[in-house]
Length: 434
Ligand SMILES: C[S@@+](CC[C@H](N)C(=O)[O-])C[C@H]1O[C@@H](n2cnc3c(N)ncnc32)[C@H](O)[C@@H]1O
Image (cartoon, rainbow, N blue to C red; front, side, top):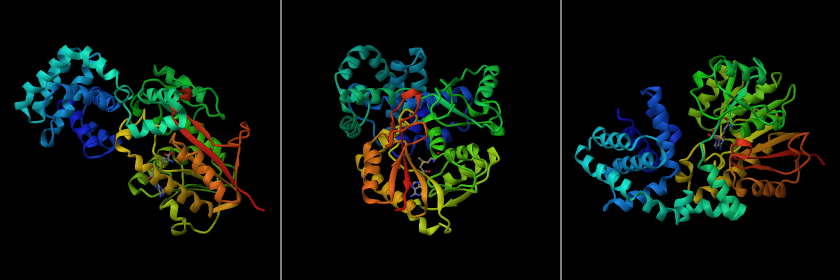
């Protein structure tokens, strides 16, 4: 199959049918070789990162938008322009292979039109780019509702910086399972396999390793034996902040696919019990798969965290991790489709859901117990404002420092690419008795 044609189908599924890239892409990559897999990923990510710009170029070059059964060809043109503008693929190959994509999509009659549009783009490139650079929306490639929210939260200059970071490629972060190797030792194992990994600056004893170029997990030494997992360093902070103690009964309330459940178990193997809850049955299967790979045990429950009365067995938890469903605006560099799939109105809905989850989990937390609230959002409504509202309405809740090392008792907002990490938010709450 022509890779450009497959990319056009994936982009059509994401943009026109609202499927997430993380669902559509792996399915499309299933039966193709490693080299083409990488090219397919590069084309899909690249087009989604620059979508409004490419749309603008395309609409400047054709008279009538391609709709309905021809819609895939619109994305094929965007893929063609993307290659000509942002990759080192020689232009004759980029144009030739893209035009052949029309045949693979059974639109042979339109090959000539695609060829004409791409050649016209090459002729008018400088002039079109200059025009696009004059429009903010085409420079930053974010939807206007999100630009507005970022500007309100961070001001104009900082929000431009954030949008710039969102358009960069994210590194691959590794979490080393200390049961098998120290992080430093695993770094040397990687070196022997010709993989250069960088150690994090030590934040909260979280020594994560960073590979600047992502690789197939099966190429990581000992991945199948559970020596190492893929997890962004910002997400790795969760288990350190949760600080699991011997004999604790711990709940991970929105657990799938299980990254933080597993890390907590790796950090503290002597828990009384680890309970992992998620409302998405399919994603819960991933939790069990990951537990099996690492040889760890947890009680996995299909349940709604906002209705704890439906699945709670009656023993209050010492510690609860609430990694709440959120806008995922902190991880746009990893999921470039998020900005086009989310709507402004989703934020209010998410804030309501997070509030219900927090209230429900608070009831099943022990007196003196700890609840760590986390999101991969950078929007204050889901983070500091959510926590301020919770504290206002919950007299037996107090916010405490995230760790022994940090004495700042407030939520911590990490922005995308700070120390190469994802955008994340953490706040630690304690249930007090009067
Ligand atoms: C940010 S992800 C969790 C990532 C996970 N903690 C990890 O580290 O791998 C949020 C999860 O919340 C789940 N979720 C959404 N609404 C929920 C609800 N009402 N109750 C329980 N889980 C929910 C989603 O299915 C999703 O798996």
